[in-house]
Image (tube, rainbow, N blue to C red; front, side, top):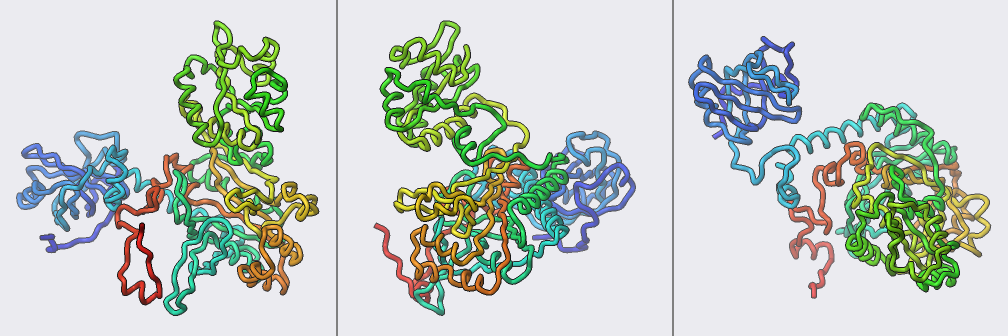
Length: 593
């Protein structure tokens, strides 16, 4: 039974006590971290979200209180009252380690069963078990610090944008489905059977309508949903710092975003972030790093060997070049001894798994060049290849050839990260940069058509709009992504506000006038009544918190995350629902085969 007699309220949190508090009478509440029974001395470490304080019981303690303390076990919820005093055996590992509370009153508020794992920092218990008991996992000090830091970052966010004149406006969670991009989560309507709402992938259309409405500067800490396969840095529901601005160009939006990042870095990490941030074109990022979200904290940049191997006797290289393809490489410095034949075979299987045809290689040892294709090249051709790869003795050169340049670059971009992991290449600090001059369209093999790389409301650049109907691959977007440590942290663009251009864009994306009006008519109709030029940005809050904390996964900064198959292990969702609920919604579930 819980001890409800003489219930008293907390005066202080556990982690706040210091030597200046000595002599104060205080009351604290929390969970028992551990008990140490030394016979006539008894110590309890009491924990709450601010830290741990030691409770002391000795021969001066009321015998009834002492006996009650002896009954305490891990995770019992208690309240204690006493006087702060200097601690005889100090503990420099905790902030409260110089003091303790000599307890005069003790209430057991609730008992606890032995938890399935110990509530400690850096728990070695499997993540699956911890996620099943997430409410216990969240008691761990390291996770609590993460969630509290997330709270602090959200407060900094609101304060910054408020000071910049932004208005926080909530947009709907039940919206019209406009399938363009990731899959929507659909919500059936009970009142309108056979019709559905969608959960927003972003507040994109509504924030543009806020500009039409004259709010000028909008922001929102917005919940967003995407029904797509999960990856390490992805959850089906996520939080976005969303903003939109009127009467601006890309430079204005980027400047506001840089000011925000500078503020966050200063207040959270104590770092003066240099601004303006560097910029790199999409084309340069792909050529050097094989990705539009490069981690620039280390080298291993991609080198172009195409001209160096043109006409060589190695068919893998020469046939790719003759077909209009490319031969590219990364050079791992001082890795010739580490990247043994066995290790390179593993890397070869890795690149095959992501679409490459194979991996050629050359190791430059003190005995000379070791390579399976060396016999097909003359000495001059090998020297030209190694020169183009910027390789020296002790290095290993890893080469991908492909008839499609983008395939080779993508494979080497992924290989670059894999090699950096295998070689334990240092990646300290924070690297932020803007990626600009994006292609407007990208080819979707599944749909066999061009799709918008960002979204269909992104404005094409003035100099490339002429190619909209004739050469879509030559159209570039007024779009900009903010990349941090190799992840896309933010994405934004200047929007189309010209009705004629928007119609041309829909047509280029394969939408008929009827389809475009059915999906987006409410937006294009609104634009007929006077729309200001505008643009915006969405910053991934979960990813930002993860990077600032140095967490290894988004699950460490989200209170109740889902695992890779979109299941929440704690509640067991998604789960079946009653037949009555389905009938009321007019839905029939087809049995799984």
